[in-house]
Each structure stands twice: as C-alpha cells, then as structure tokens.
Image (cartoon, rainbow, N blue to C red; front, side, top):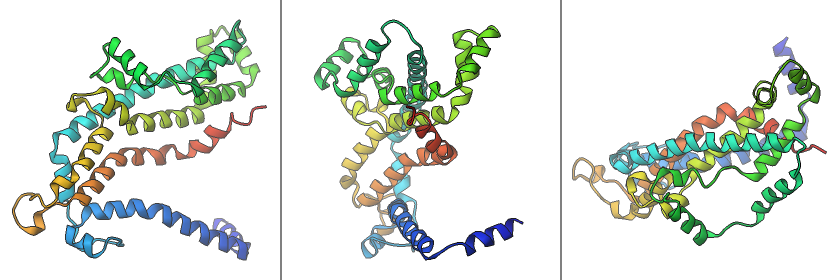
Length: 296
C-alpha cells in the first residue's frame, strides 16, 4: 500500500512541480555548499587549496589545521566558558521568559503599564558606556556572570510565548484549580506540557544566541582563560596570518599549516555543537513560532 501511494504521488506530479523541485534543490545546494567547502578547506594542504579553491572532495586530506586549533589551550577554556554560559544562561533566560509570559496572560492592576515598559526596552537601550559602567559598579567585570546576568529575557519571545499560553483552553486551567492546583501547579502541570514546541524553539534560540556571543566577551572579559569560544575564534582568525607556514610536527612543507585552513577549522569547530543540536529540535520550529503569532 505504501509503495502504491508513493507511485500515485509521483504520477500526480506535473511540469510545474518538477521545475519547483529542481529550483529548490539548486537553492539547497547553494546554501549547503559554503558549509561543505569550509570543511574541505580545513582538511586540505595549502598547495591543494591554491590549485583548487572550490573543490568537491579533498585529494590530500589532512587534520593538521585541527591539530593546530586544538593545540591552543584557549580552545578548551573557550569551550568550557561557552558551555557554562549557554547552559546556565539558557535556563536563566527561559525562567524569566516563562514567568513573565505567564504573568502577562493574567489580569492584574498595572498590567498595561508593565507591558508598555517591556515594549519600551525593545526600542531604547541604556547605551554601551552606561552599561559598561553599571557592570563595573556591580563588580561583574572579568567574571562569567557578566556574560549571563545582563541579558535576562527577550521581549518578543515573551510576547509570543504569552500568546501561545493564551491559546491553551481556559477550561483546563479552571478544572485544575477545582482539583486544588495552585498557579504554579497550573503552570507546570497544564501550561508548560502543552507548550513544548514554543519552549523548545525559544530555548534553542536562547542557546544559539549565548553560544554565538562574542562581543560581550571581548568587552567585559580581560582574562583570556574566561573568554567564550566565539571571542577565542575571533582571536584565532585575527592571528591566523601569523601561522602561515608554521611547521606542525616536522619541518617538511607537507607538515606546514596555513592561515585559511586554520580559519576554516576554527569556524567548523565552533559551529559543530550547535549544528548537532538543531536537527533534533527542527520539527518544533514552525509550530513553536507560528502557534501564538496569529492570535487575534
């Protein structure tokens, strides 16, 4: 039955479907090839890269660029810092996002004023210098907390999550309260289990934002062992020209690393963890972002 169903779907294709399929396939290849080419450049020697800057497969694969990247102790400390900041920061941001979104779906005195204050922060910020002085006065400079605490929650995520919470049938909440549930019990036993797509989507976005943050590390962290991986990556890329021709292991030409290979190896090492997480949560994205966005 399944094979017959697939055959009937194929037979129902017309010329327009074939053209759309071909165009989308080409777009997909155009999008994927830069990532693939980044991996290839990191795996080849300088000579092969000069001969074939755009290639389909490596003729002389080598891991020397990755060896050079992982040889630096900054990579290990950067991964450690980013992992701590991503995990703790995501939990911290999701706590405030869920709490505020759940509070905003309730009618309480001053709700409109509080929501207006939140929306105000979307358009106006304190500025770079006042923010830096505030972090200095709070004695957060050169600590991991300066990478976590300043960014609590994103307002548009709060609004979308509030709309999603409001779509949960009111009867479920009322029946839970009749059974003796408190507001916290309603949130954890009714609202959150029904909101997993949005929670997974916003949680992943928070995690990606924390993982990719480099500017705060450059601005607030002087101790190189506390800098996040993206700031370390920026340093490696800036200093990549200095490794041109540096020998790895021996003094032969085949054992020398080159700047572009180190750059691409650094890029691939830092994006790989997030790339591994994305496929597992991809199915939540569409439903998580659109479920509350069309609330009238």
